[in-house]
Image (cartoon, rainbow, N blue to C red; front, side, top):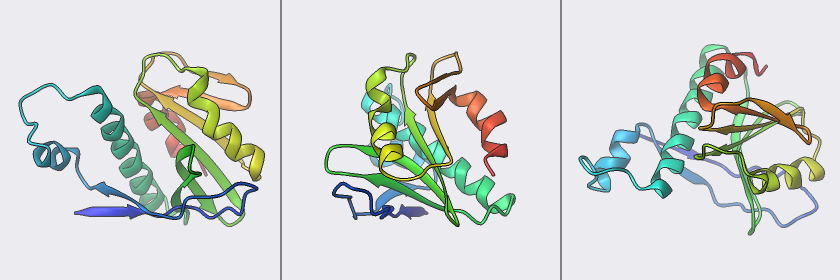
Length: 154
């Protein structure tokens, strides 16, 4: 019914978080537990629900395409990268944001991570409409990321 997402210990030059995160297997369970079956979903919850969707899509592709990757998140007391896929020495970092505009601050954790360890690819995923690349980060609308980018990560 749920999955733990362990914290990656990348041995970066910063203090890293070690506590795992917890994701329900279905967003409907989250809404039910919050007793929010009819009301509009609060903006703060939409971000977590979008993260949950991306997490499960990562798990499905990893399993069905036999990538052999481990899925983590990475964080410090100040910042967090939502997902890090690790296969051998390859790392792929993914930050998910519920927002129609990709704000520069959304890239902060990704920059700290990629400046601390060697990363193969770095992605931002958001609810906007335009894909673009900025400062080494490939940023995609969620639908484009899930349909075109995710199947080709490895």
